[in-house]
Structure formats: C-alpha cells, structure tokens
Amino acid sequence: MVDPQVVLAERVQHALATAFGSEYADADPLIRPSQFADFQANVALSLAKRLRRAPRDVAQALVAALDVADVCASVEISGPGFVNLTLSDDWIAAQAATMRDDEALGVEHRAPQTVVIDYSAPNAAKEMHVGHLRTTIVGDALARIHEHLGDNVIRQNHLGDWGTPFGMLMEHLLDVGEEESLRRLAAGDGNAFYQEARAKFDSDPAFEERARRRVPLLQGGDPESMRLWHEFIEHTKRYFNRVYAELGVTLTDEHIAGESMYNPWLADVCDELERAGVAVHSEGALCVFPPGFTGRDGQPLPLIIRKSDGGYGYATTDMAAIRYRVRDLKADRILYVVGAPQALHFQMVFAAARMAGWLPDDVRAEHVQIGNVLGSDGKLLRTRSGKSIKLTDLLEEAVERAEAVLADRDYDPETRAQIARQVGMGAVKYADLSVSHDSEYVFDFDRMLALTGNTGPYLQYATARIRSIFRKGGLDPDRATGRILPGEPAERTLALTLLGFASVVEKVAESAEPHRLCAYLFDLAQAFTAFYESCPVLTAEDEAVRESRLALSALTMRVLRRGLSLLGIEVPERM
Image (tube, rainbow, N blue to C red; front, side):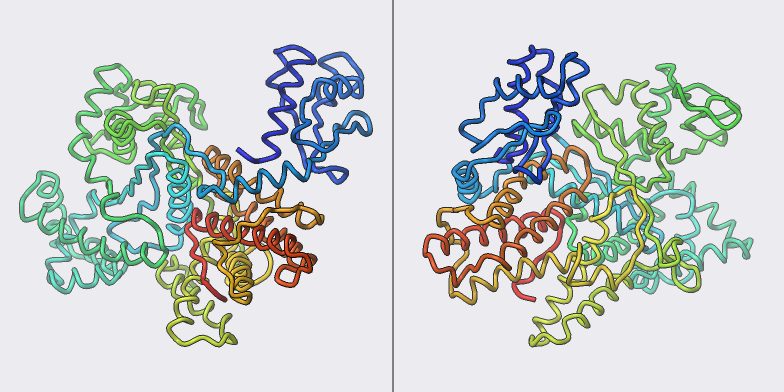
C-alpha cells in the first residue's frame, strides 16, 4: 500500500500506543490534507479530554514517539495541537516508482471473498425502462471492482420471469401467433404486448378464463405450457442482451437467476421455516414476525411467506434466494442493488433469514439502495405522456447527442460513430455513478455530455489528451519509465493524488459506493490539468525533468484508464 494517508495513519497509531498505551492504538489519527503541509494529524485535539492534558502537550508527546524519518522531511506542531506532516521528495519518488512498475497500480489482491451481487433484475414481461439504468450500472461497477481485488464475484440477474401474469401472456402469444409474438419480444416490444394482454384479460371473459386455466398448467409443468414459456423468456433475453451490450455491462445469460429458478424450492422454504418455529400462521397466512418491526398501529409487522390462498410472493422467493446464496454459493457477502423503496422489505428478509439460521453472523447481506432518476421538473423521469422512458430510447439519444458534441471533429464516419457511442455511454454511466447510489439525481443530457466539469466526457477527454502528448512526441507511453522527480508544487500534488488510487478502490469495495472512485478520478484529472498547465512536458529544458514528467503523465493515463474501466466506461484513443 503506497497511499501516504494510510502510511501516516499507521505510523501515528503506533506512536499513540508508544506514548499513551496500547489502549490508544485504535484511535482515529484524523489524518487530513493540510494547506500548511502535505497532511496534518488532528488526533491530539480529540484525545486531549480523554487524556486530561492540553492538546499541545498531547501533540508534543505524540511527535516525540513518532517514527517517520524515512517518510517525512519535516514534522511540526502548529496552533493548539495540529501535527503538520510534510513528506520527503525521495519518499514520494520511491512510492511513485513502485506504483509505476506495478501492473496492478498498487492495488493488492486480498484473501478472496465470495461476493454475490444481485442487480439489474428487469421484468421479463416488460421492456427495460430508465428505472433499470442505475441498478444495472451500479451493480456492474461493483462487480468489476470486487473482481479487480481478487474476489470471487457471482452475478445474479434476478429476472421477474414467473408468476400469474404469464397465464395471460401465454394465451395472448397464441392469439397473436408464435412467430409474430416472439419477433416483437426480441425487438423489445414487451410493454405493448403486455398491455394488449392485460386489456383483453380485463374486457374479454373468455380470454380471462383461458388465462386463468393456463396458470396452473404452467405451475404444474405442463410440457406445452413450459415450451411456450421457454420461448417467451428466450426471446425476451435477446432484447435484454442487446441493451446490456449497448451499455457495456458484463451480464450474460449465465448470470440469470430469475424467480422461476426458486419456484421448485418455495414449498420447502415454507416447511423449513414452519418446522423451526420461525414462521407461524396468522389470519390464514404463513408469516415470520422479525422483532423490531411494527406497523403504524404498533402491531408486529409480518413478512408473509405464504398467502392465505396458498400462493407465494416476493418474500418467499427472496428467502429461498438468500438460503441458496449462503448454502450453495457459499457467499461471504451479498449485495442487493435494488431500489430504495424496497428498504423495509430487505431489512425484514435479512432479519427473518438470521432468525432461521440461514444468514449467519459471518455473512454480510446489504441492500445497496438505488435512488430515483428525475426529470428537469424534479419528478420521476418520464415521457411527456407520463409513461416510463424506454431505456433503449434513452441510450440512442445519448449517442446521437454525443455525436453532435463531436460534430466539429475531423473523423471519418466509422470513427465518429465509435467515439460517439463511447462518449454517450460514458456520459450516462458516469452521471449515474458520480452521485451517491441512494441519492436521487436529475437526468440532464447537456450537463452529463459537457467536456468540462465532473462528467464522463471530461475524464475521457483528459485521458485522451495525455495520449495525444505521447502521439505528438512520437513516444510510447509504456516506455515512459523515467525517475519521477516531484520538484514543482503541481508535480508533487499530482504524484500524491496518484498514490491514493489503491486505497480508494479498496474503500469503494468495502462501502459499495462507486461515487467515491468517480470523485477520486475527477480530482486526479484536475491535478493533471494543473500540472500540464504549469509544467511543460515535451518542451522541458532538462532531460531528467522531461523524463520525469513523461513518467508522471503515463502513470496518470494508466490510473485514469484503469479507474474508468472499473466503472465500466470505455476511453476513446482520441476525442
């Protein structure tokens, strides 16, 4: 680990134990960037009351025990007890060289965990809409980041591919004709197909009767009903896969673990919960009452495992899923990348699973809450007629608008189309990932496609601009391995920012917060811009300085490319 903030935190904690006793070793050193040095430790102020000593006395005792001679050029106490830490140029240079020579850029593989990530999960009976955008993008970024750290990632696309609506959908498929129905489904016309079936179900008693008869046939495994269902799902998957390919996410058919997968286990789930005394009968339904959950009337809130009519619901399927993921997939951690409105549901499912012994204390189950995508009016993003926006329409518009942004560039049509797709998708994905996943954000094409500010295109442009430096100089960035000399303030700032990459990636994985990586990459791009504006690279007068700046530029480009890749964002060779 080369992150100076982490290194200094470890040294300060060791000094706390030496100066005040081992019980203080786990105190937060409060290492922060400083305008008076590279960093400052503020722990003396927070410990003063506990130690019953003046903060400055605490700081003096801490500095006396602090061993940073190999890391810092100076250590000074300022104000009431701030400890200012200025790193040595030699240490920064050595750490930057280590990072430069490391294919992993300082990111270390840890003891691998099995991480199950449940994300995307569209309804097989309908088209993907803008509401599926965030869960798909955030989940995919988390999957990439965990894999980069060496974890065994198991993607789970929990398709809504089962249930009573499929009775009417199968009958409508037969009425329209198999060939035409399947063509429409593969083309992404699922919403209209569903609405037609629903309208017939509500208005045609004969159709309603046929649809109701089809449901038990399907649930009972009738061969012809199952054949129709399989065809329906297979052609719907083709549409989903086109959307995933356009978005550049890593989900494939092998990751599908839809509701239908758990259907054979639902009765056993209920039986096991009932035998264990975890589930009890209440008003004809089989329920789990996790402690601590009450309704507005103050009464215990039930998690309904089996309805009074004998049917199963989302809770049953989710209980079956969590049991499978722990027992069969051997999960150490399960991330549910699902909309924020489902928060109470998942809290109750996790609590019920712990009551049943299916979610032991050493397995983490977390709801990565996804906030809404809003329009400019502050309401859910919809068409002018009030309907959900099709995801395919949104992505097509992103590419068209990106092509307009690039209109003044001199590219051949094929290159322009490729770059427009990369910029359009990068803009949409970064706009989503750069805000906290549980926050709402306003979908604004003009802002997200801007080449300035905290946007995907700005980071893509910054990366491409570094590439252009080497192209202009006729140089190979892979050969830019000169000794890094952080002499100028902008060089020092850039080098220190680079050294923070590995710890940011680890923090993002731990917190499931990709926006932290976005913030880091934006800071890095800004640090490079300041460096580039004040430190000539190709025209540097001294050869050693030129080689150092080329090495810094190449390392920055690698980190930007790697970081954007972890977010699932492609970088054009030129923009």
